[in-house]
Every structure is written in C-alpha cells, then in structure tokens.
Amino acid sequence: MEEKIIDESLQGTALSLKNKSGNSKKLFIESYGCQMNFSDSEIVASILADQGYNTTQRLEDADLVLVNTCSIRDKAEQTVRKRLEKYNAVKRINPGMKVGVLGCMAERLKEKFLDEEKIVDMVVGPDAYKDLPNLLKEVEAGRDAVNVVLSKEETYGDISPVRLGTNGINALVSITRGCDNMCTFCVVPFTRGRERSRDPQSILKEIQDLAERGFREITLLGQNVDSYLWYGGGLKKDFGKASEMEQATATSFANLLAMVAEAQPRLRIRFSTSNPQDMTEDVLHTVAKHDNICNYIHLPVQSGSTRILKEMNRQHTREEYLALVDRIHEIIPNCGISQDMIVGFPTETEEDHQNTLSLMEQVKYYFGYMYKYSERPGTMAARKFEDDVSEEIKKRRLTEIVAAQRKHGAYRTNQFLGKTVEVLIERESKKNENEWSGRNPQSLVVVFPKEHYKAGDFVMVKIKDCTSATLIGEAIGFSENN
Image (tube, rainbow, N blue to C red; front, side, top):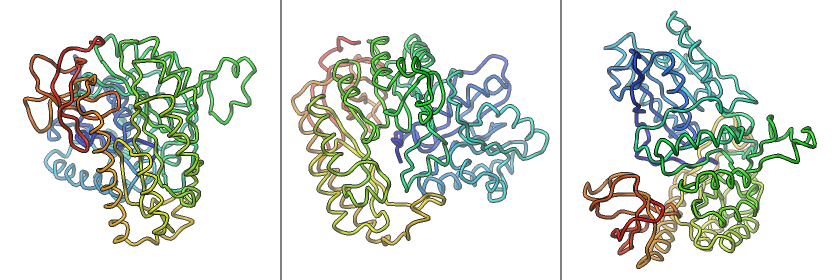
C-alpha cells in the first residue's frame, strides 16, 4: 500500500510508442495498479523493442499481449481476471496470439496462474523482465514459461525505458525497488522483494535524457523513496558491512534530491512515496531550498489509531505522525499533503475509526486514497487475524472517511481562491475540450480556458472557483519557468 495509485484514467491504457524501424511483431501491453507498474511497462517495452516488437493499441492486431498486474487488493486482481476473459475471446479468433502476465499478481500466484487461467502462456515477476527474450523462445517452442525469481540486485538501471505515449510531459523515474517495511496488510515485500537502491549516476543520466527530449516534470519513484541509500551497491541492510569510504560518501535520498534539482533547474520534480518513519528533516529542507521541487508530499498514514498502527506493523504512532506533519508545515509552508487510508482493518473498533476521523480533521489532507481492508493471502495480517469487521461496517466507515476527505479537500481548494498559481499543462480537460488541465505544485488539478497555450507550457493561472478536488481559473500569462 506504500505506492500511490496512478491516475485512474490511465488504468488499463495500452502503451503507445513510436515504431522502431524494422520491427514487424505487434505488442499490446496494458498496466493496472501503481506508478511502479506503469514504469515497469516502459522497461518491458524497451526490452521487447530489441526483440522486434512495436506497440499497438488494437488488441486484435497483437502477436503478444502482456498485462502488468497489481496484487494490493482483491479488486485489482479481479479486474485483471476479467481482462483475461477479453483476451481469451480475441485469442479464439487469433490462436497464434500469446498472452503473458507480468508484475505483482504473477509473483504472488507463480505457476498456479498457468493452471487457473488456461489462456496464459507466460508468467513473469517484477525482477525477471530481462529474461523475457528467453521466455518468449520457450513460448514459441510451445512450452509454458515462468520466471518469478526475486533479485537482491536488479534495479534496471542499465535499461533506458521507452516512455508512456500519454503526453510526453511527465515521466516516472524509478530510484528504488522492493520494500523492507513488512506492514502486515501488504504484499509488496513478497511480490517485489527486498529494498535496493539504484546508482545515482544512472538516475541523473536518465533524467538528463528526459530533459533533452522535452519532458517538463519527473517523479522520483519507489515503494519508499526516503529509504534510498547508495553506497556502491547491495541492500540497505548491508550498509553496516560497507567500507568506511563507502559509508562516508554514501548518497541519501536528500542528497539525490538535491543533485537532481541542481542538475535540472528547469524541470519540475516530484517524489513518491514517502514513509513517515523514514522521512528526515534534511529531505524537508532540500524541498524548501529548491524552487523546482514541488511543495507536495504523499504521506500514507493508514490509520489514526496508534493501536491499529501497531497491529499493522507501522513504525510510527499517531503522535509521531502528527508531529511530522507539523514539522513539514514549519519547514515547507503551503505544502500539500495527501494520504492513504485503510478502513476495517481486523479488530478495528468504532473508537479506532473515530481516531482516524479526528486525525483527518487535524491534518486536513489535500486529497487521499481510501480503501476497505482486503485480506491478502500470505501476509502477516491474513495469518494472524480473522477478518472480523463486517462488510456493512467497512462500507459505512469508508463512506464517512470519503465524506471527511471531500470536506477537507474543499477547505484546501478554497484557500486558493483569488490566488495565482503556476500550472504545468498536462492534457486537455476530461470534461471540456476547450479547457486545459494541469497541476499546481501542491498536485491539485487546475483547469482553465485553452486560449493560445499548449500542453507542456508552464502558465500562471488566477483561481476564480473550485470544487473539493479541482481549481478553476484563467491564465494570466506564462510562468518565468516556461
């Protein structure tokens, strides 16, 4: 759950890329779940481009169909299974089409996937994408192919990802993989393995390439970006075994963030996701120091009850979390903070629920991602607890939390009325083709009339109106950063 869910409009969107000359095979690849899955799909497309594949957005034309999956909730897995039914219908017409399942669901189910979903030819875990050429040879030879081996070293830092064909403006740059936190509700440590960090020079090189290609904003991405630590290689837990020189010259997340901001002063920089237990003040001071780092932090809390947080194996209390929020606002004035929240975790009482609502009232998040607890096989919570909160109570509590977030979102957006904000235009508004849509530094969506501006422009927008989630205004000119 430590991953911010990507824009719902991109869920299931087939990757669309510029054709590579000479490639004759067609790849249809779509992604579900978190930002890391979308980033991984770009890596997969890069690997397969060297194997003769160009992407297509027509499922019916595909020689190879891949779905990059999420296992964070049962609903996410059921969505993928429904998509496989659609693939199966197409495969009846095109029996030569091959189907592969990638990502966290593949890692969780492993070989069982081949038995459960007869349509699937290939199952590939998040650390095995470099093995795709070999796995395809197995499939082409008529054999099922599976590689779900988790790695302690793989970061894909040596692969230059092809980029999502959505707008050419925003890009995801992975800096860590895996997670060591072992929250009891979460499958990520089991599906993505141990936490490891990527060489900072490869990160800087990738971002330089993005800047040269005209991208305007990058998001440094990881299950827990604040745990980033590079000292020449290896897992974070092995840092104590590093040489004195490696320890003395290690790169922390705050160091990396400053390096990126200083190397690319004209790029907007975001990062996700932060874990409260690992966020340090030097990160906050780095954000405050550099104008091109957005004043926005996604800071999952999961519950406002210290008792439930302990049962979740979260390494922070309610009080520690609120103290961190206060410190964020002291160091980074006008910082937008968003949340992840789980309702109905096993043993959650009405008092625990009211503690969550009171924490939300105190923080007044800009926006959030709220879910009912979904028992995930293999997690500590599934082994330790009975899922004892009824579905009816979960629904009621989720409704109350969503209502609270809507009220707090309205409070935050109303604070921008009459103010002028910088907006990076990302796309045409979903509701009005005559309006642009973009985000301000706090990651709030802003819409305004198109006039003579274009996607990729930095524009100053005066806010005239708002909803609980969107700012509405009119452009008054280009930003000095344009």
